[in-house]
Image 1 (cartoon, rainbow, N blue to C red):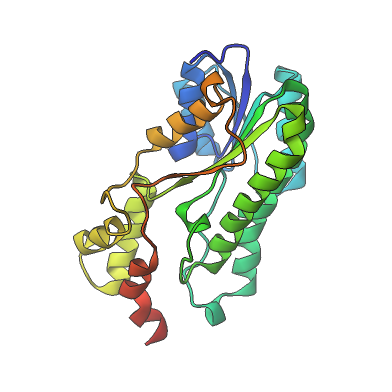
Image 2: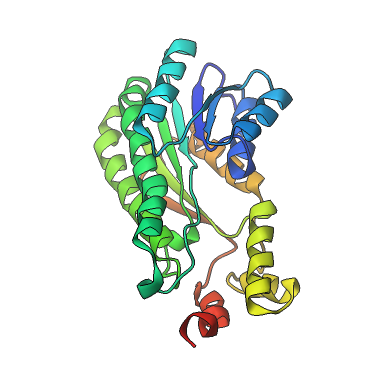
Length: 267
């Protein structure tokens, strides 16, 4: 794939899935700009690949988002692809136990931040007939007990993906979402370890619970998500828009996770 002369913004692009996406687009010849809330992650990323440009930013802060786009305009004067990758897990709690501040914080990052970046990118993508890729989750396709704020944000992301595909399509802009399952890496390992401690069981038992959520009994790789994003923004994906594409080994449901944990929250 040749994406030379294309400029790409990856939010939360300095680590994890975001970093894999950044590397994939760079390998395809694109100019890549990342933003991230972690100065340490940005320093590590730009030290490894100095030609990646960056902005330290919290996308839930409008001034920070403005700075991201000021930097892109100053450095490149164009934007062809935006990958909305920012997301936090939010609380794990029964409905009545969710603190309003936790609800607000999760939606402020996962939904408002997503909107702020997309809003600023829209005129630039119209000008370039570009692409928007939104990193959602299998939690955008199923009920996910005890994760209400996260689910609210991710279901909203899918609705907005389809809405913006309709709004921006006449300008040649394609808008799609990728819905990964559990992704191999430090984040899922931390979640598994925390669940094992909460349930007083083994890490292996919890890992098996997560694996049973999908038919292939697998965790996906960050690189799989990156390659899907790359495909959607390439000529091969030129007729794909308004889609929520699962990349998850075929998730059958998320309730077995709830069944395993329900006693702690309802007993």
